[in-house]
Image (cartoon, rainbow, N blue to C red; front, side, top):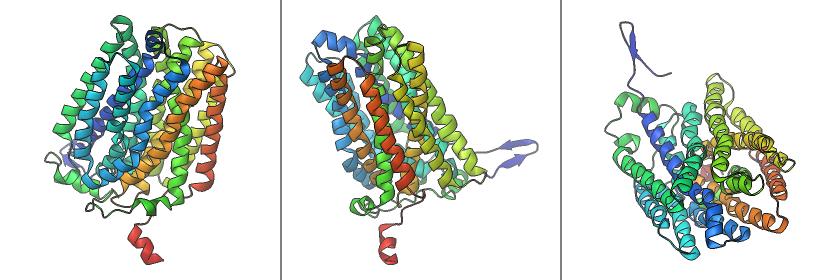
Length: 438
């Protein structure tokens, strides 16, 4: 427990600055997803205006993930070499331009190019947030710290989808991209002003720094001293984690890219209603992320339950709940469909929160960026596939039903990976230590 200072009957503590860092990381992920969902919400308007087919729009939706996935491993390696501060500073500037310039395009090709650029700029966001929480939060607080940034990606759909839908309905899709670019500027300025690693932060008290460093945090090492990619790729735990991420990511990106369109196309809602209904499952997901994937997991671990068993149990439960996506294929009723979506998204968000706490737990010192980058690279292969596969299925069948069943089958593969191959959740030995043991 944190050491407290008692003054008479008043108990005070100075050890709270780390939560400002957690809030900053969460806001960054929130903004990150605003930049992704604007195209999703504007989808039907763009398809009508530019005469884009469902199959072609699916390819357009996935284009962000092409470069986002491709850059995961390189950005993870760079992150471990230059650190969170400078990589996030530079990348946030680039994604401001990629989002803002979209408001001025007049053709399909420039839109593709800007989405590809946005994928490059936002590639290190989650790995950087995971690395930062590994520095700033003790292991017993890692669940809540991870939920602070991972939950924000879901909360973006609660706030962002209705917001963007309102802007599009009131003024137009171009104005929606301008607004999200302005919000990105706010984050960029705040990050430049606030973020430093704990050892170099002038506003962090010595008392809080000692508390953080006593909590089994990731140790900072010199650039290049972390375990290498080739060594890490030989670890079964990393592959099991990555395949699990790929499984829930398929459904996540199906919902992220196609849910508003599904509600408008198949359930015949207008753009405002589709935006409001889309927010319901993501609100459930945000709550499940913070309350179950974050607070409940930390609570059970603090009460003495085995950390590995707790995390693995809730990771599996979350993915099992994600199978509710199959239920959507059985109904054409809006309320019933939203219930199934809400269960599935809640489960996926629990799994995602726990999964994103893993890089800072599993990675050898100095290798969180590489582990997170590899996990996110494999995970985003399905983020590329989901919009395209869904678009072709909808184009060929005129329905989303088969697309939802496919998502359920992919989820089953992830559950198998986690339950059979992950093993105990604990730090992978440093590469040098592994050599000595051999």
